[in-house]
Structures are given as C-alpha cells and as structure tokens.
Image (tube, rainbow over all chains, first blue to last red):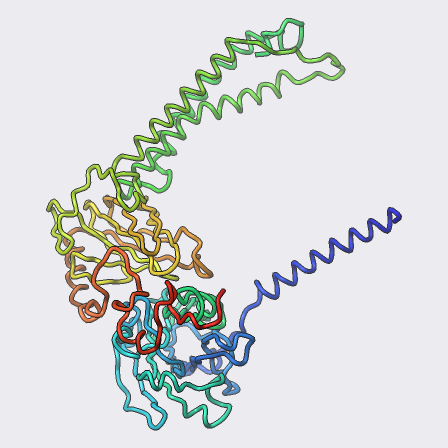
Length: 243
Length: 326
C-alpha cells in the first residue's frame, strides 16, 4: 500500500473512531428527556401540573421499568419525561395520577409529607369501582400497609411527598397494563389508582431543581437501586424554575 | 556542586562563591517563606478552625507546608541560579565538568532527606491519634478517643455531662438524614449540633457506599451499608457548614449535599426537644434505633413485603424470579 493510501486509511479510521465517540456521547450521555413547559399556562400566581406514575413503560424499550409521565398542557397528552418547567414565585398545584402498586420505602422517613402547603397531600383512592372521599394525609407508613408506590421529592426545596398507592395488595396486582394508563382505552382508566394533590411555592430566584423517588423501585436490580431509579426520564427528573 | 570537579569550567570559576550566595539567599528566603506560610497563609488553609478536628487538620497542613517551604525554595532557587549564571555561553563548545563520587554531598543529602521524611512520618502518626483518633473517619471500632467522653447512655443526653452526644448519619441515594438516639430516636433531614460539645457521629448507609464529609468540621467518614463508621468532633464556632457526599454514589452524587448548623447549646436543646415532639408520629414508624439497618430483613420491613412476595432475595429488594439484572 502506498504512503498516501496508508495515510488516508489512517485518517479515515481516526475520524470513524472520533465520530463513534461523538455519537455515543450525544446519544447516550448527552441526551435529555423533553421538557414539558408549564410557564405559558400559569395564571394568577398559580400553575397546575399533572404527573402520572405507571407500573411499566410500554412506550419505551424498557417496558418493565416503572416510570413517571408528565401531561403536556397544550395537547392534554402524557409525555414520557420527567423534566418540566414552571414559573418562579408561583404556587405549583401538582396532581399525581398514581397507577403503580405499593412497595415499602427503604427509609420510612420519606413517608412523611414535607414542604407542601400545610405539610399534607390530599388523596383520593380508586379501587376499580369508585373514588373515595378526599383525605388529607401527612404521614404514610409503607411498612405496615400497602400505602406508598413512589415519592415525589425535591431535596433542594425540602419537599417530600409519598405518592399513595392503591391500598390493598389485591389492587396492587390488578394494575393497568400499558402506559400511559389513561388516554388509550377506557379499560385502563378503570385500573386501581390514586389521585394525589399537593401544592408548593417555587422560589423567586428560579433555578433548576432535581427531583426523585425514594422508593427503591428498580425491580430486578440489586436492592432496587438501579434501572429506573438511576435513569432520568423514569424515576428522577428536573424542575426548571424560570425567573 | 559543580565546584567539586577539576577542569576549569564556567561553573568552577565561581563555584565556592556561588555556593555561599546560594546558601545565604536560600536561608533568607526560607525564613521569609516559612513565616509567610505559617503566619499569613496558615490561618486561612482549609478546612479552617470551626471544630477541633478541622483546626487540627489546619495545623497539620500548616506544619507540613512550612517544612516543605525551604525544600521548594531550595529547588527553585538552584534551578533559577543555574539558568541565570551557569548556562552555556554562545560559542562555548566545552563539556560540563564530570561529577561523581562526592561522599560529603551524598551523605548530607541522604541524612537530610531521611530526617525530613522520618520526622514527617512520626508527626503524621501522632496527629492521626490526636485529638480524637484519626481526626475523622476513625472506623467502626476506634481505638483512640482522646479528649472524648464515653457513650455512657444511648437514650439520653444533657449538656455538661460525661456523656457524648450521638448523631447517626444515614446515607441513601441521594440524601443525608440524621437520627438523634438520645432524643427519642427522631430522624430528620437537618443536621444541628451544639457548639463546644463533643459529638460522636455513627455513619452508615441504606443502599450503596457514600462518604459523609462535613467539610468545615473536618469530618469525613465512609457511609457503608451494614457498617457503622465512627467519627468524632467538637464544633468550636456557631454557624453553617456544608455536608457533601465524597464517594461517587450514582447519577446524582453531585447533588447529594445539604447544610448543617452549629448553634449555642441552649438553642440546640430547644431545637432537639421541639423536633422530638414534632416528629413523634414519624418516629413511631421508624425501625428501632440501631447502628446499621438491613431493610431486606422481613421482620423489619413488615407485612407488606410478605404479602407482595418480596422475600429479600439474598440481599436484593425484589423477587429473585424477576429476570432483569444489571
């Protein structure tokens, strides 16, 4: 092989390796879930945000991972993401449609509601037939009852909300089969679930705040720590507060 | 050193005079440098003096930096002198003087470096013991607890008694929580300490390996699951300090930090008693206070795991029949 040909081959091989590295960096490391923007729908100092938990993620290549979804306020559709944006100095009213079943918390501390208005969450249970009356809850004991499925916690704001679960093991075993759990078929909307509501105030300065689940819900991973527990877009995300 | 060689070279011309100049300049600069390091820079060296452990570390680093100063100055001075005065002149094609076999210089070098290294080893070993064991991260069974009162009671504590205040540090992905066994065993996300009071940290983890690093207090101890790591300190100043995780523990390791607070003893007692009452309902559902926690033990987790068929799975939290493993 001539010298120019060898040099050309070397350059091409080098560029191929560089391109592969860039692809890996952008595709696997640099990729971020989409952000659902709620800033345009805020009014009178408040904004309503709707989240959903699901026992699986059939819209991805990880169908057996639990996940959060976020409702797009413009389309009304649930998006598979955990990133959302809200305005600063605004009361955020969050509704979590909790379609997953119960799993004990590793640390019962996270069963206490903190950082919300009144340090409570208001829960309605749907057992497959009817909704219960709203209950204001400040503490859930996940070690004694089938009561907690995930948490929505923003450590930077001192916010922790245990997301109540359908409250029997029987309901826990009759969860919806595809995700998101509403908006596909009427049957899925009938699956046992909870409606959890709480409010908190975003800081005036704005910023980006991580949020996460403290239930070790990475089924199949050692101690439940991996998988969805360690992947943005599933059980961890970011709340961008726009000043 | 070049003056030892025989042939007439640039270096040998002013060899002894250069050596004298180097010695004088080195002594003067070293005195100035040591004073600056010890007296000017030293008080500002991290981690500061907010606790006895931090102050001890600051003193250690100051001592080491002061000892190192003449060495650094000597090296830089010699290199600078060589570049300035011993460089080869244009047109000078002669070789430099061959140097070998100077017993006096060799002996001096070996003796001086041995003294410095051995002195540092002795000093470092002593400082690992004082003031309270290794100063931070003493390990599961610390041998040396100099100046620290015993853990006379695990269930009560009062200021001024011969009983050390115990605070359990619990790491979990990705947050720190703190448990106060001598105040009913409440657990909180706030780390509050009384000033001028010996504190014993019992550090553990609920999941992976973390590291408790109370930066301004000069305390760093690994937080390992199923292990109780002990560290001591005595906060000396009121105010805020940073707590970080110093062990890569997952995707949000970098966000695993919060702030602790040192306050007057009376204010601490008020806070502790108020928090104990405020968190009474939560404390009831916590597991009994222990130095480590194993959430995979069914007796502790309760009936939900049994009903769901989560059988601890050899350390796992999920049914081993679940096919997915990392």
